[in-house]
Image 1: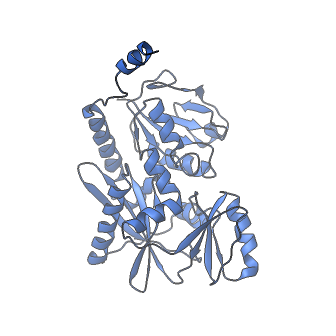
Image 2: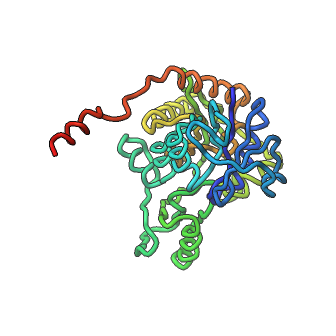
Image 3: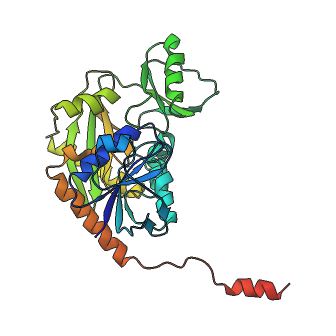
Length: 333
């Protein structure tokens, strides 16, 4: 069985992807390590390390039909984040080359990455979300009520996010958000809201992680808290209210089904005055949210085994209509 982990890519979350991939690599036995540079050059590392990756001390290879380089892989575990990586671009490439992967397909990845599209689909299914509106660079933006949150529409890891409390701070926040995407979201800010994070995946049935009560010293859970303080041993706190856990799990299972998600997904919620709001969907969460599972090694190996079984039992679908129509069309000319 040949399993690979795919990391990197042309994304603002490039470095976070490397951390995720190395975390997963430690949990898999004899996995191949694939790394896309910021120029989308593909490298293979037999024994990866941060130093080797940053200095491109690997073997340069390319995607081929059914193969990566000369290796025919059974499965690629997706560990990429952000725009151009997690948003369906890489899923589409792997589908094109008919290389199996663990993660959501192009359509689900695109929907999950774009906060506007996510919101539209959630609202269509009567799932409560925070009020928001999208704008493109150059659009006139008028805000009636402050404070608001300004964020890139298609980005993650809390990059480019600002809480804006007065009009004179709006320009700076917009400039920051537009660094990461040409489309931005203006969202109602919910002061003193409690944030929950829940990871889930599906094999025979949907399984849930513990639900984390996100602790933040700022107005929102920012990049530094997610990826710096946490890796220095910050404590995690988990929800033990059985009824609320059940409610969150029901919403999460519905979202997983509606978006046709695959692999480990994290859904972030906000609660204010007893009302639950779905905040974001993360189709490839940082480090696959491994800290939220009691035995992540078992989870990832169970997922791989299930995905390989699904691949074997897939029925080959008809790729195109009959060639007869081509001959018929030729004779009519």
